Length: 92
Image 1 (cartoon, rainbow, N blue to C red):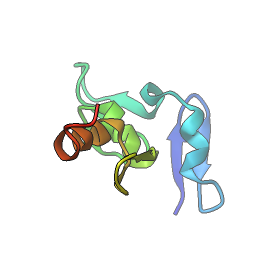
Image 2 (image 1 turned 180 degrees about the horizontal axis):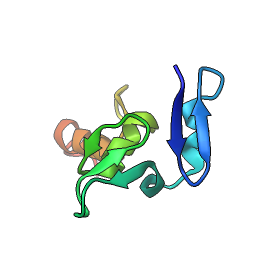
Image 3 (image 1 turned 45 degrees about the vertical axis):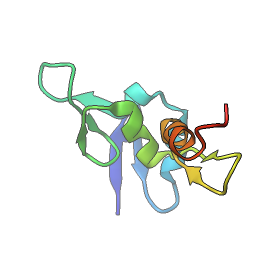
Image 4 (image 1 turned 30 degrees about the horizontal axis):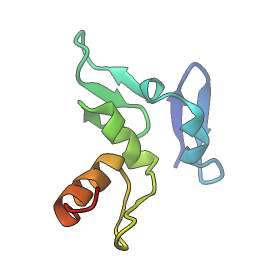
């Protein structure tokens, strides 16, 4: 499958060139405006229209956030924070 992404420079992503090579770009460069309003935006990697670009960025480039008190691992820091508040409320 060949997909072309315009980020000032045209990239062709195939099995040889992974999406992680694009991680050096800012979050805002991976989204384009839909219509005249600020929201929503279209992801240039998958074409999905999203309202929260930062959260959608982690769909393609997940982080690695581990709980220090149990074996839970999350892709987003806010999800780990929610986990800490609900599962380990006495730990500060």
